[in-house]
Length: 344
Image (cartoon, rainbow, N blue to C red; front, side):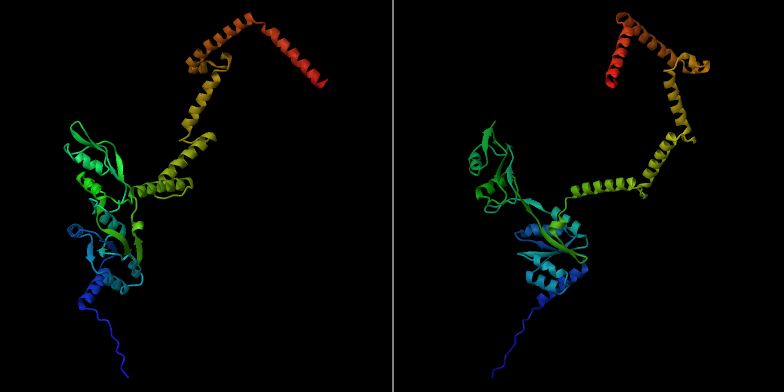
């Protein structure tokens, strides 16, 4: 009977060394990221790698070796295997995940689109003059779907127009004209797919935050929290001064309304009393005022008299025109008759 021979797969030393190197870097850095490098020209990739020196380390390896290294580190980091797709690399950094995402995004540069590629966003050609001299270029622009004409001896784009919508395949003629117009619809750079930090995995969608909106929301929340603490009379380092100011104002208002004589309130009470006295003096007769009060009131009394005299003159004139006394008696008789009819 023939013996059954079991063959074990042999992993070359260079692959083992590669796996160990990946594992060592995962242990060395606080943040591990998965990046996509598909379609990245070698020259631009090397430039970006150089620009990240000191902030992040990029390592490119075979997908199966990356997967094997992740398997041997921890159960949590194994989940990052789902981000291994097409050409993949690893990025290591001691910056937090959000700073790393921002750093990689800022390293992206505009790039021309090639014929046959899909437009990543709506591609717009703006209205205005171009740098082209008059000639066959006008026909080439029009053939590419770009509204061009010659005006004032210059080639101009007549109207702002969307020449390719998001997801549409860009024809070769259009791609060539866009490049000649210095319109670069693509962004060339590394694609950070996810990071792993302190046992937590962050998807790129989580890392891509709108900083302006975040700051606005934070400011609004801070203001609302402050108002809530003040209205709830909750003393903190930031609210204590406002709470004390509110308490002083409330206590002073209470003392004024309750007529409590205290050093901080007496001036307000005296001022209030004086105003009330002046208002009262305008409605009482001169006989009710003593000499001292008349002297103190002075101009206020003098001003009030002509107003009374004018009113009296008008009333006298009215009396001459209409029999006021007679109309009053008529009115009283009408009221009496009405009451008599009501009560029998």
